[in-house]
Image (cartoon, rainbow, N blue to C red; front, side, top):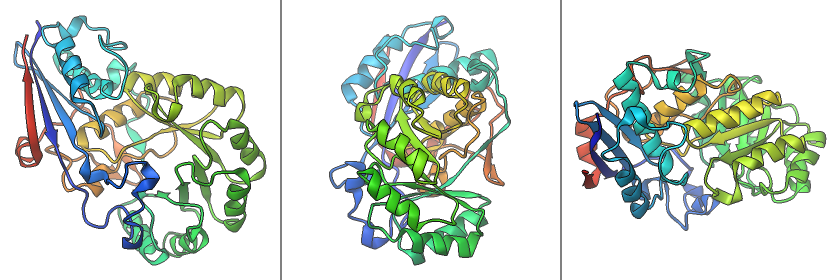
Amino acid sequence: MRIDRIECTAVLVPMKPGTVHSPIYEDSCDQFDWKGHSFSDYPKYIYRLWSDDGACGIGESYRQVSEAAIERNARALVGRNPLELNLQSLPFPRDREYDGFEVAVHDLVGKLLGVPVSFLLGGAVRDRVAVSYWTGRRTPDDMALIAAQALERGFFSLKMKCALDDPHRERLERIAEICGADFEVVLDPNQRFQIPANAMRVAGALKGYRVMFEDPLARWNLAGYRYLREYAGVPIALHVHLPYAAHGQHIEEVALAIRQDAVDYLNLGGGLWDFRNAAAMAGIAGIPVWHGTEVDLGILDASYVHACAAAPACTLPSDMVGNFLREDDLIREPLIYEKGSVRVPQGPGLGVELDEQALRRYSIDVREFRP
């Protein structure tokens, strides 16, 4: 048995209108360091790996991936026996292009063995994964509409992007009016509270609300994180995307944050095994985690669900809600969300099927690799 063909399809799937920012914040994409671009401007790649007996594994890349590295990874896999691969360390570097191929290999191996991806990761400890709703920067009135939308869709928490001088309290007031005092809000300024004094000021203005800060300061400033954890009066979370060096973060940063007692929670992104291993490290230290997102399509979201299902420490609501925000998720049947959680797909591999018609509709380029 071998992988005898790999197809890499570039797709552009726009966000639904109005699903990210209020209009007055539409030019605020600098918070993501995308130089004026938005979620819809960067293509993703859908990977299909066919074995010579007709089985097909599917994967999905992140945004801003390198075509040269995609070719490198595809050529490293084509012609190989998928059942002889080391799933924990595929034969190419662990960079931004690694994770989409890792997902496709696991989907293919799961289908060949008749088991779900969560089984390949050690076995599921839950059949549902808690999920949080997501939005960009909003005016207070628009935030009330988003809160009503989240509540209607069964969510119990909401993560929002923000900046230092945004109307934080007014937003929280509107959310509480719609969803009640127990509704949890995660403020993610993408490190733009800058210094502990600023974060303390925001925390003081939000007393009485159920709120958490994610990445309030530069991620290297773990002493500042520890200070906020001790004095701000709100839970503090650090986002680490594994394993490549985005923003200077590596898996060692998880251990360092634990050693310095700097965080209450961790938001972990990255590949299947890197997430699983980092979550295990956090679990040993008694730190709950959730899985981050890049507002992805259905294939990556399904892989996140399997990874969360196999991670005992992943008890906090994760961010897999791309299907609510994108025009299409490119899978035939959407993931099933109910009561603030998403069901873990039970079929072999990822348990989801690629929507071929949708793939053709959003495709902008296709490359094929053979031995």
